[in-house]
Amino acid sequence: TQITKNDLTHIVEADRAHLWHHLLQHKSLESTDPRIIVEGKGMRVWDQHGKEHLDGVSGGVWTVNVGYGRERIANAVRDQLVKMNYFAQSAGSIPGSIFAEKLISKMPGMSRVYYVNSGSEANEKVFKLVRQISHKLHDGKKYKILYRDRDYHGSTLATMSAGGQNERNAQYGPFAPGFVKVPHCLEYRGQFGDVTDYGVRAANAIEEVILREGPDTVGALCLEPVTAGGGVITPPEGYWERVQEICAKYDILLHIDEVVCGVGRTGKWFGYQQYGVKPDFVTMAKGVASGYAAIACMVTTERVFDMFKAAPDDPMDYFRDISTFGGCTAGPAAAIENMAIIEEEGLLENTTVMGERVLENLNALAEKHAVIGQVRGKGLFAGAELVADRATKEPADEKLVQRVVADCMQQGVIIGATNRSLTGFNNTLCLSPALIATADDIDAITA
Ligand code: PLP
Image 1 (cartoon, rainbow, N blue to C red):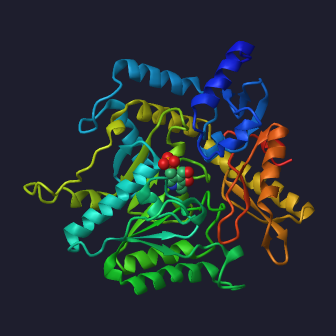
Image 2: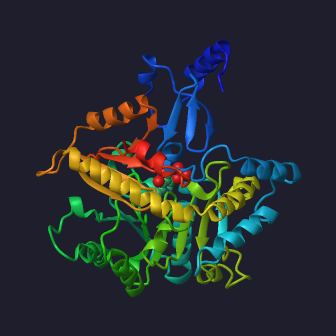
Image 3: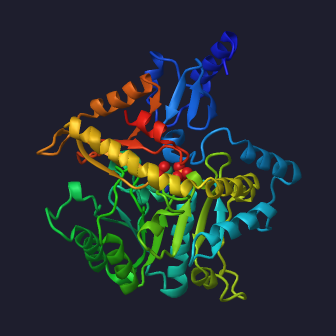
């Protein structure tokens, strides 16, 4: 949609005068206009100048899984809002029940859905539950939560306390006690050298932390199935099997953060299902309604749920928690249609096939450009780590990564990049196109 020049001037002025953009050094807007995305359809978005962009990152942060302009979702949300927009979630709602049933049907072994607003919040709910379980069953002693180097779980102070990306945390401490870091599992930057059982060793490194801390003090382990913003880190073979064994051995609850991988991104409904994992908690957000409404979910098992109704006469026994907008019906109404689209259009299958094409194309690029150190990915979720020198794996200059992203933008393709970590690695270009991507789209994004 071409907007008038007057409208445009006004919108840009209002942006400059009053908006504080996420993740932006605003000084940059003194020399350029803010970018305003005006319209989207399928895989494409248009900015305020009418320029078309092919979106290789699903709304910037791997969110718009079913693509833009889905009238079916908008109509369902509209109908639901006119009928009943909100009531506190201590009562139920029609879309709330229907989506919970549909979601659980995709998650064998899981059974209860708790609605919240954001991925950070969903993760905090798990952290609270783990602490409460510790009070209920372990005299408050099994309260520690293990998180992994390079993983990210949110922007709130508790989730930052479980934040493995030092570059994001550097200036916001001190953080909450009771969160303990375990090593990352990226073989390319790993500590165990060229071995055949890297995955098992990386998981054993978690066990070492558990033994150091004392197994009786560790309540949960929180992991991304594939680390997203920390550099698109796919787990090495054997990793998850060993992680599962370790959790069982020490009675540690396994919390899988599916905020990025969830709802189709890797080619299965959930990333953990790629690796045969049996979690106790699963959190999800971005792809749940593809950004058509704000919804996030904390999902757990009947075993965990039962712990919170065992002593009804005790006024402290239940999960004493609320999230006001968890009662908004727009979220589950959008999520029902989002899931139906993925099923009806065969988008999980498409993701698997197109994901392989992304990796093939990136590997072909790596053969031509020595600056690509390693290509990683699962489904429509891929990363290419850039290096200054392939032999030494010296990280590429961060400015080069920014330049590649800017050049692609100039050519009408939006791609992403992870931040360089303060410990000196991880300049990774990221691709996470919508699950509807065609072969032509993939070829254009990776050209
Ligand atoms: N967990 C992961 C793996 C994420 O990538 C993110 C956001 O990027 C979050 C949690 C936080 O989600 P939100 O921004 O909705 O709070």
